[in-house]
Image (tube, rainbow, N blue to C red; front, side, top):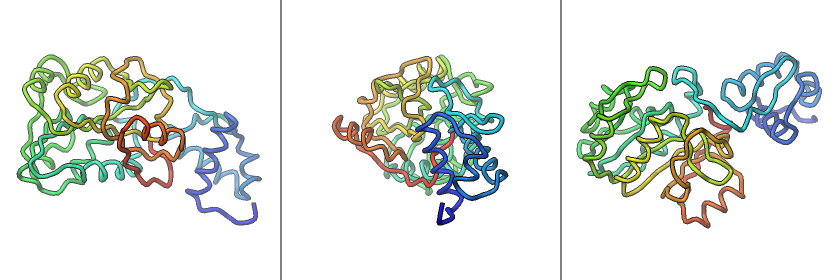
Length: 260
């Protein structure tokens, strides 16, 4: 290539090539981008850590479309998720009662929020609760803590949720199926999401661009049941379909697609 690219630009181009061809090789990429093989290996390692590619010896592959549960501690990509959290936190208004589902995206909202004494936040997260409690009225749903998801679930959590009417709920999914179903990897998460949706006026869903066309074990609902989608995708087909379904889209500015 004639003009050297910034690292983020090169990684975006590498990802686009993998999405087109299904696989890439380190040697070929080094020649294509006029950089060392070590630089390409670092790029592929970064994209692998974000869950965007599957690193192999000598190159990388496109990860399987069928997704599996990833433990909270292994999700990584905090910096790439902060723009989602900031955009979501900005939607909370004075006087709102909101549910924020625990995830490595939404938990960051606790740190992006300004003090809002008139706001009530209900959550099943076990992370950042002291930060959140200093800014809003906090209700924790309790329940049984899932050791890998690090979130509260089960009978007692659902009982708490059923007693509250939410102005807004903020939900996460790691998979929107090709037929536009919101999916979940955990049965506990399925039950919690469905209960929250029934008790919320406005449903807001955070979707990273690499989570479109991924399928998990459990179908939560049709994507059309959501009122607002926060996403960093620039896929015109997806954006057009969202518009046709009457779903408001808030574009999240990302220089590299979001992590897992």
